[in-house]
Image (cartoon, rainbow, N blue to C red; front, top):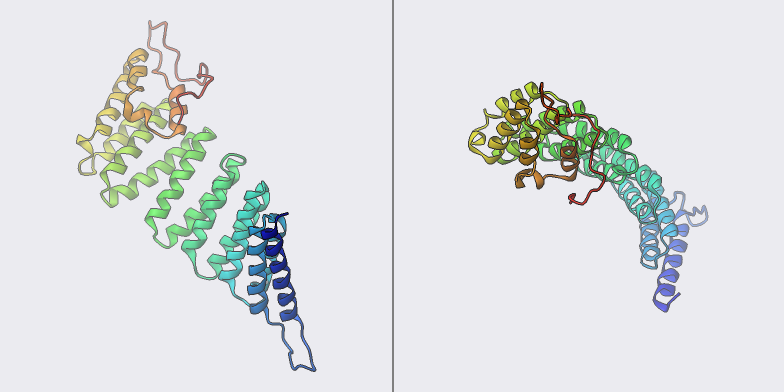
Length: 305
């Protein structure tokens, strides 16, 4: 260990000694109550020193001690902040279970302290930790965050949660749930007249509905978005109309060419994966049509971003 880190650890140990002293009571010294606030401050300083010295496990333990001190002092916001720091360190050391556990504790603490926006952001981070390893749990956390921001009318944050939910639903091939999430998001953007976002989401919605083989629902969604001023003349609207008409024609060759449009190839990876599975339905006498099953999906992800 180099001299700088040794110095940091010595400083951390001194902070812990001070914190422990703040917790001691003494009848002789007329100190009848532990000073949780001062102890929490010293523990936080120690946690920072340990983190800077790359002693991450110890840093996390001390942050959790600081959280206990803040909780004992009913300082819920700072308790939550210490739990959030513990969550971030857990992520850094590869403890995914700990990262989610402490981030959820942080979110609950922020919410209890009246900081609903900060709580929602903590839930968003927790969901992000789980997107790859446990998408089902990530969905649960996203729905919790969505419910919170909808109560406080935070449209932007609600949109972020809905977008994350959509990606997770697509990953799990829960297309009906993805459609509901996209529809909810579209309605929010129609209300505020954000034509560009309405166009992007309608294009996404049409793709998911065609993945379900439901071109009628895709047409209805397309028509619904036309009530947003400016959408009708957008590139997204033209591509949506083409996707539906070519899909219904059963011309899979033309449909595959359409899926190569730059506006479609620039979409998120979840949609690029979805497009690999899309085929125009077989029409009578078309020996090349293969329906819309999940069969011949390209094995590589070279064209993903």
